[in-house]
Length: 282
Image 1 (cartoon, rainbow, N blue to C red):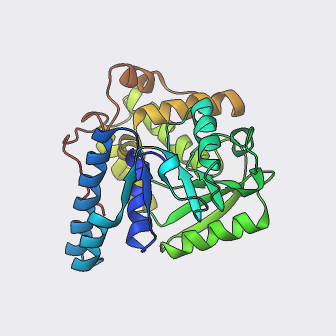
Image 2: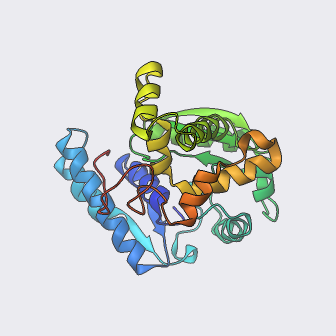
Image 3: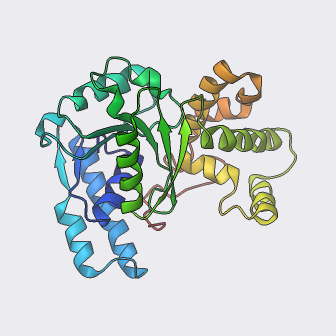
């Protein structure tokens, strides 16, 4: 796992829980300690819910290896997943560095960037694809697999096998702006934000209406808080450029991000959130 942010930690957890030998590459000592804390708390919560044994908890807390650079990861690993922020140049740089350790499959956990554009500069683009996980990773059963123009059948088959091994299901889509899930999810979120902006209802009532009417486990506004309002805004800008004005971000979203109201990670978004790390959804 390249990166110990929210997504990287969640993905590392589910692979380690499935007994994969797992490495997390993270140069920040502070982030590594945060990752250890999140994974330990998630493991204990999984035990309390009967999903993990006490032996599993001990293994998860001690058997994930944290390293500062990709060079410290063994050559020829089965799968490497990049989870750094959604910045094209940064992801390309990281992916080229990870390719040097010769993983059998190289993946990006991007939610909206083009797999074909990310593959530019790679020496083995046929081994590259998108593996889009959802936050919180331990709760969502879906992984969206994004096939690039160069992704070969062996790579796709290996990715499908990896997804099945962690107890999740895959939806395979072709590389296109926003793939499938980000486009559908973002449209619902942006319309819900516009309704708050226009005074149609409170965030709680709008979310409750969607949850009860359409049996969604989480409403679009609370989910936006969990995803991160800054992430929502970045994706909205990107998709509006490629797909048109229906993805243009509402002014309320722009203003909230400018004010530092990013959702769960900042403690305030459409809802108020405790600032302690929450692994209760494990």
